[in-house]
Image (cartoon, rainbow, N blue to C red; front, side, top):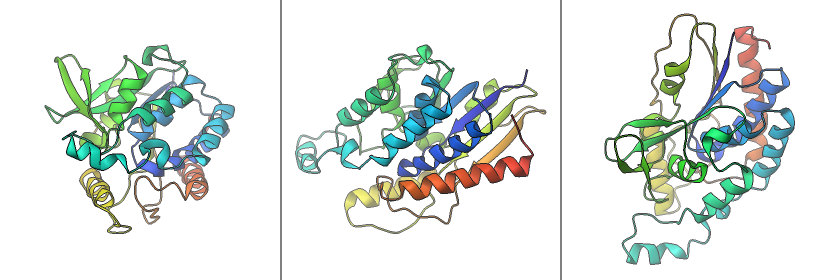
Length: 273
């Protein structure tokens, strides 16, 4: 049987475009059998895996529309204290974890309705790791832990406990995870919202840090698929710039651009349910 594997990239606030892409895919009757996510894409993927329906996508859209940077970071007033205390991060991950808990009722990855894979980067080895079980709060906090912005999360990936950080550092579009499980006849839908490098909106040291990370992860993908696996790329227009990774002022536009990208990809690939 043909399986549909959804692979969702990281991209910060550009992750809103994945909501539009999901609208197009589920609206066309294409339901995921497996989801794979990195960073913000892991949050979207696990949110969908709870209930892979168009209604769930609209719930996700409502949550994205209300999103603001402070919902993830809190006040920047905490930054000096964290620096003075020599903490390896600017912001606590408490707000991120609260958001994850409010979006996804399950506590364990293996309890989701659809099998999910969450990508992280092992800070010791520098390699990507693909988790298929574990505490959702810890895994998503690690997958979205932008280095120096949010704290690393200690996870045991089979080689012993080690700090893990943002999946985008090793593989922003985790196609290698999909390649490891795809078999001939499967369809892989790559929902790619990778942020292009751009020297814009650099108003603070945090903006420079996040912009530098965007450069480091640009086009860093891997994954060789077996013959017979169809890969359909739903790619957000690289020319669209929406500020930093934590700028949520363009969410509605990103919904529309993401939906248009997915509709175009389905037409180009002549894909239907």
